[in-house]
Length: 315
Ligand code: FSX
Ligand code: SF4
Ligand code: F3S
Image (cartoon, rainbow, N blue to C red; front, side, top):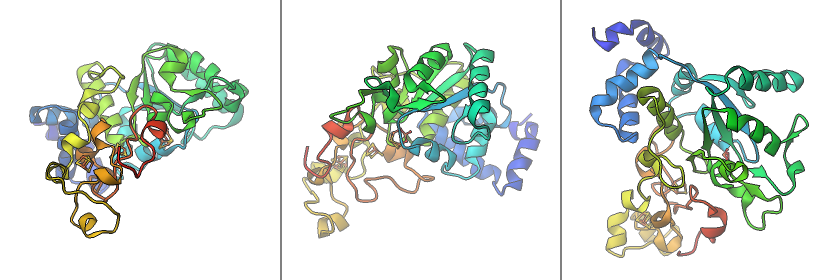
């Protein structure tokens, strides 16, 4: 049976939302390519959404950050994708979208962790103050206490955003609170999806990889999936030929800027930054910093706020 026939209900549901099968398959092709899989996987990726075999429970924690990563996922590229993501994940606890508050919320977290111990995925946003724990408290417990309680009991901890992966902006020098990323703060291995914010497609790709292959994707030595962070921005940049020809923008608003020349001299950190922004782009493939004429700030690299500044000066 054709997968589409088999999952008629799913496609009818999509069509009611005004999403054609063609649009959906286009998204699945884009996701499959982003995940570094061959086109033969497209029907299997579609099947993960159309007929989810398992919905891993997810506990989503917030620590020191701006919630930009959650905003990115919830306001995903296509308005219907967020619903599909919520269909393949069983989000049992998420501070931004849950209805519960106060003691009820605390109890929900406690129950989710207890009932799904060893099976849930813990997604973490934000970093943890380790010097002055009282800088971050929820329900009378410090971020550090909460993370120590929850993360080691998860099947895997996925750090979304540079803050939870590496410390990010809260850990910027002089870092009075002693903020650290989750792996560092707890001394555990985490899967890291850095970016400030992370491109939601990389979270979806990681989860779909897990549901499709039964395991997390291959990682580099900083815990980042190779499918997304295996190459530098510079290696995938459409302005690269201008770099090779030494055609540089020296000033914003100039003729060279209009011609789309290389942004290296106005501070582009693309040569030192590992991320897939050039191919994944943001907002449904609309654009990304360099396409919009802005240098890459290296937002997905450890300590970017310290090592990549000043942002508008040549490396
Ligand atoms: Fe950090 Fe993400 Fe930057 Fe913000 O959660 S990576 S401050 S976009 O929201 O953590
Ligand atoms: Fe490299 Fe940045 Fe120039 Fe692109 S704009 S070629 S990433 S230096
Ligand atoms: Fe960040 Fe550079 Fe991409 S600033 S969003 S890694 S282009």
